[in-house]
Length: 292
Image (cartoon, rainbow, N blue to C red; front, side, top):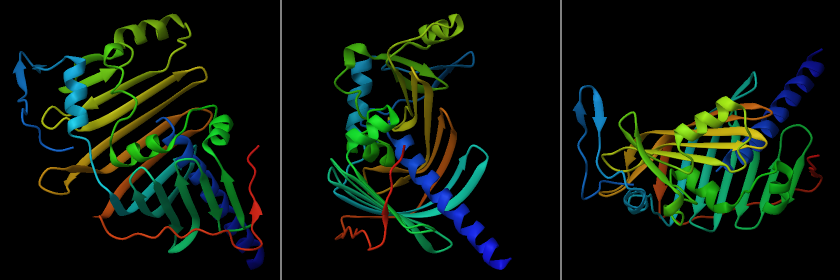
């Protein structure tokens, strides 16, 4: 009986790690400091009034206040809810900017998965239960998920930066929502009208919310209409890293598609510009993992 229970527990833990690791990769595809001209909120009959609604001005301020680093080491506490299955994990994270993202995912103090992401390769080992490994490039993952995934998007979402907006100023729509600046590829009014009429919208929609005091991203909202899915990423509790930079230390990711995925991430420790190693090897006896 004890052996059966142990086998069941091992299966649950292994399945949790697989789901969580896939969720991280799946969610991340959808994919800051004080500014010289900080704006004060002005209330007029209960309404928030803000200046600088021009899209080019907002993108300039957004980019000027993005988080910059060379090397980052961090520890994160993670709570995940995938459909009705909840789990908690600890992740040790290392990032060498524009080069390597390394993660060690642990539960109960025991490493259950290790991930190594470079600009063209994703590697994964799963240690619980049946020993598995995965090696693939982004084209394989993108085809598997029917989505465009790249290194820059993953890196940016982990540190609260934005990608893909800066070269499209002419296509962006600026606005204000809940006393925050917004940038979007589709006007909210048009989006609501299309959704109410039940028409398909071929292009994806993106919205960025930023705080007016420092132009830090507080929320990134993605819609994709074919297939129907969305990702809502919220950042909070910014920590002062040095005299000029802020890093979001709490983030919530909600992904709605074939599975409903919610992930809460809390950075408990961060250090910068320290020497790093990115150890990764596939032990003997591990079976190649193929997702069908």
